[in-house]
Image (cartoon, rainbow, N blue to C red; front, top):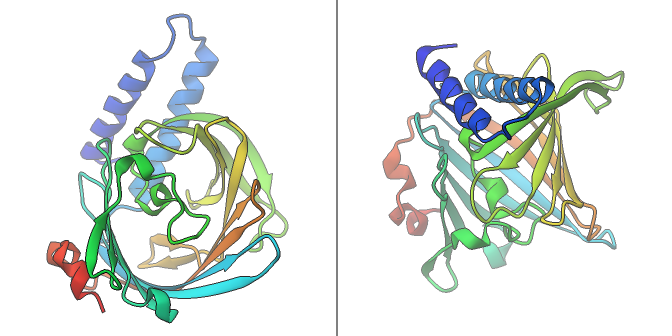
Length: 274
């Protein structure tokens, strides 16, 4: 762990433990320490990619099984010391062509998000209080579309568990870590993540709503490694257990270190997106 990560870990751990009840037992403290350590290791392994571009197909499925598809181009810029910047550009179908979505993710302060609507020829800022709303009619919320910075959550290790996936039909060993949003206006009380012990990526995440009922499950499949370090899934399946709807994000054409800069992620870039 480098110096920056070590300092971050120490600061986060101290703030987490200070918030514990005075009589918190040793097992609870160790579970919090271990949960945070897993999150820090996951973040460390995904640091240094610089930027990447990719293309994506978003498939929306309703309760009756009817589907519709959208094709999207994405750009992401890593911001050391803060959250990443990302730009999503919709190419099809015709009614959403030219729509562009810009996100400035942050650690503790509210993420900044803007949506360009070509039919209205204007940029709409997404209110920080509305981050739990659905992104472009999908089962992914606006808050799901921002980068998941360590400081956005507090953590607790729950258990070890082996789960079966498409890639690992015989099972893959995971840490099960509970994380609790530390930012305002989240649509979730908590999330339960199954983190691959070898790769330190999430194989599955359960999302619990504000009533602490299971709302959605995200399953990541077909992880590929890029630049000998960075894992990205080919497919992300989000199932809403309360509505019966689901969304599949199918990713391809990843390109890393393409030379993107802050200028590619300005608000003006929304209107220029093609």
